[in-house]
Length: 436
Image 1 (cartoon, one colour):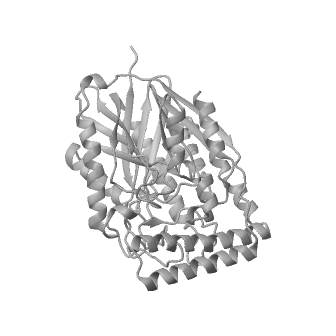
Image 2 (image 1 turned 30 degrees about the horizontal axis):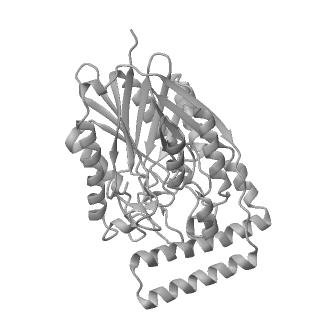
Image 3 (image 1 turned 90 degrees about the vertical axis):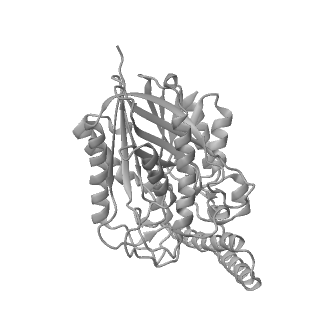
């Protein structure tokens, strides 16, 4: 008889000393304490034929170097193939520097090597603990609707993907739920640069709600889907912990309600586990001239100044403020492109690892970098299978993968990218090829 086993574990990865909080450019922001812990949560699934692992970490990025080191350590201890381990960042902007900023922001320090070593150890540890905690289980996959928990940050009526897949694991013998893994297409950025406390942002409250309703021992893996142009911006009244709690609890309730609606017939005591991987080169972005890059900075800065004088709405000012950040970063990237420094960046982040894991009839795709939500929608539209996408996984891409439309408009994300929009098309084509 075929049997399914799974184990979960969670470990605190909050830095033990003050560190720079990474996420908002041109802002000196050193932590002054901890509001809520940063966690690494892991899940190992074993169907007797294959073993796979997922880890979701409350940090802004996961580098290729971290991924390689963790995979080596976990494979050595557990025997699970390193390539079968997926590591994803939640993308909180209230955590430490993980990847040295390629834009050479004079305010942002390099990643602390001691913390990176500590993080590698902790992620490896939580994978190994999950492996040791394996028990016979049943699995179900459902989804929740996150409408209202953030949206398109450029327009309240812009593209969104509110479908939140939920992998549910329960003990075969007791029937107790012990693990959930979700993907949500949203920047966890309720908190802004004025907050100087370590925090998982609203996903931390989602975890808190689920633990209150489903049990303190339930481990939640929170992963971020394509959300390069998604944020809570138009859906909150302030950048406070109260608002983070409100959004987090809304999402937590939606997830909990979906889980509690599952029937016994929705659970399976075995499922297929398959993994496919491919490496992909991506087309470099064509940069404007130095003169044009400098002119763009001046233009956007002047526009922002005018809006502030006129007292335009805060959400609109924030959008142009981000465009100014993007223009500044585009200028730095243009200079790096001219002097050849950008090639070093490409060498460190390419090729991009594209992975897909099937859990029965469901497919989970893991991509590095920050993709626009339109790519999630395109994958779901073109494939007859049930597919979900986790981003910020197993590496970084030095910025955003935007759409052709966004590239032409030249806003914050397009300015803050090193690859052309054609790269997004190639990623989609590779996913189609892998899942066909």
